[in-house]
Structures are given as structure tokens and as C-alpha cells.
Length: 426
Image 1 (cartoon, rainbow, N blue to C red):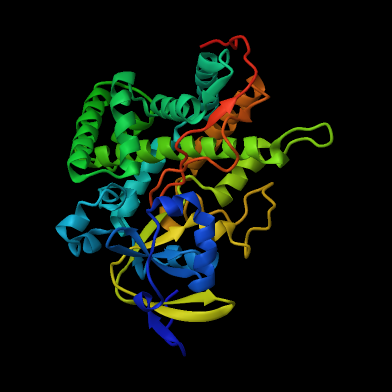
Image 2 (image 1 turned 60 degrees about the horizontal axis):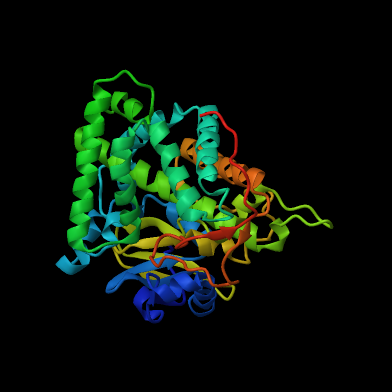
């Protein structure tokens, strides 16, 4: 948190060279990079989130808690930062994840409360039993497409379509619109060139505007309909912005949470049943993934309202550093919760979990419950019907998608004994 005095004060740029967290090298071994960061910099690290776009990465749990809770000194509105960017920087592929939008994620104060209230109202009406039934039906249908083959890409053939179909069902988005959103949502996380970004944004606007018109003519009880009915009286652009966040986070995060957890459960002996010991539970695996390989690894961007003097730890000593006004401060949920300072290796219940954020911009509790239920049920359905799932790739040779924010596999090949189709009603 901001501190008025210190014996050793420096600027963030004087700590050392900035580390690029968007590279393939970083994606291949983020935890090796986090260890290096702790040794060299402590809990505050100068990084680049894209070439020539500087930021500060917070990798200390307590430092992150202090910053994310300090709305007096840190804003979630990026517009002042955006105003300082060059044309090239402003068109960087990562801007789709950072640029201002009229929703709860990118606003403070009264506007944040207005948008947050609308989002909470829309999400609170989700029936978890209906979600569970939807996951079961969708999971069984997807499993039947590959169960007789004896092999599958569990990311592309299971986790990805399942997460998206569950989301479209609770949002109330018809299939013909959902298909348009699916490709655009994935592109948003990948980062694309300016021309493609414009095309993607236009696709979002057109699709969600059509959804708003459709819902306005119906008396339905789904996320989109409740959002439109809320007393905040969102306009078309605000509705589009909310839908963009629901679809990008609501599909990408569960998809990668499922895939990353399946990867853990297929490759870690603690999760493989033997005659000598039973496997650890799905709940434990999901929690371990949130601590060590969270689907959104580095995010929760905030912006110092002015130059801020911040306390941080290095080698057990308290130091201070000046953070420049308006420059992004990114929290590494992966580094903070995998740090040996807070990670005891006991994942039987949630502890020190930052995977869903912290402070006023924490992921709504209703959305967290839906994501957790979706992931848990999807994994249980898969292992119930295919208990001998095994990795179909050489040990340690999985590819991770590069990018400063997500922790996402390129694919998840698996092999198993071919079986007859699963009987189900749906």
C-alpha cells in the first residue's frame, strides 16, 4: 500500500530490465520465470505485457491484496492510460482485454455500482440445478462423439464446446448467434492485429445487438433478459459490453479450468487410482489448479491515480518503489498463490485463492458458483464414463498458448479404451 517514507526508495524502471510476459518462452515455463522474478525483484516486477507496453506485475500475495483493495489510490478505469499510448500501442493485440468498456470491470464508483448491480441481478437468477442438468446432457453428447474411438483432444472436443454450450444456455443465446460469438471470444484472448480486432468487435456489436432485440420481444428468464430488465436500464452499447464480458470470461475461463485440471489429473500420480491408494478428489484438483495454473493467470489490471509509493518485500526485507501514474499494475494470480509463502500444498479447501480476483471487482459469487459447478460436473462425467483416461503425449511436451494473461493449453490429447455410447436423455 502507499507509504510516505522509506530509507530505500527507487522507481520501478530502476529495479532492472523489464521481463516480457507475452512470449512463448514465458508460456513454456511461467513458474520458472516467477522464481527468477522473486529472486531478482521481490514481489513487484517491471514487465512488458506487449512489446514497448510497460506494466508492473505483482507476484506477492499480501502486496496484491493491498493494491486490489485500495480503490482510493488505484483505479480500474484505463482511459487515462489509454490516452498516453501511441497509435501502435493503442492498436496492440492485447488491448481487447484492457481497453475501457461501459461495464463493471472497467469503471469505479457510482458507475461501477450501477453496472455491478445489473450483472449481479442477471447472474443471481441462474438455477444451479438447471446448470448441473445442462452439463450432464451436453457432456454425455460430447463424450459419445469420441468414446468409441479410444482417443480425443479433450480441450477442443470436450472442454471448449461444453463450456460454451452451457454458457449460451444460461444466457439465453440461440445457437445461430452463439456460433458467431464462439470464434470471436477465443480471438479476444489470443490477441490479434488491428484489422482483425475491428472485425471481431463489429461481430460482437452486431450479434449482441440482435440478441438484445430478440430478448426485448420475449418474456424470458435468462441472464440476457434479466440484464435488460434491471433498473439500471442499460443502453445498447452497455448491454453489448456486459455480454462481451459474460461470453469472453464465462467461456474461456471454465474451458481452461477444465482442461488444466484434466491435465493435472492425468499426469500427476496423486490423482491416479492405484491398488495402494485412492485418487485425490476432483474438488482438490480444481482447487490446486486455481492455485498453480489458474486459467486467468495474470490480470486484475488497476492504474495508479497518481505516482504511488508502494511497499513490497524482497528477501524478507520491506522496500519501497515508485509506480508511475496511470501505468497498468497487473496481479499475477498464478505467482501469488503458488508462492511458497502461502502455498502449503494442501488443496482440500480454498485458501489464499486469487483466481477470481479480489476487492470490488472480484468475479461475482454467482458466476464463481456456476464456473465451479460446470468444471466439477464436466470432469466427473468424463471420468465416470472413461475411467482409464491417459495422456496421449510425451511427458512434459504439452504446448501452452503464449499471451500475458491466460494459462491455456493448445490442446489436450488423451487415449483410453474404446467403449459403447453413453445412454442419456437430452
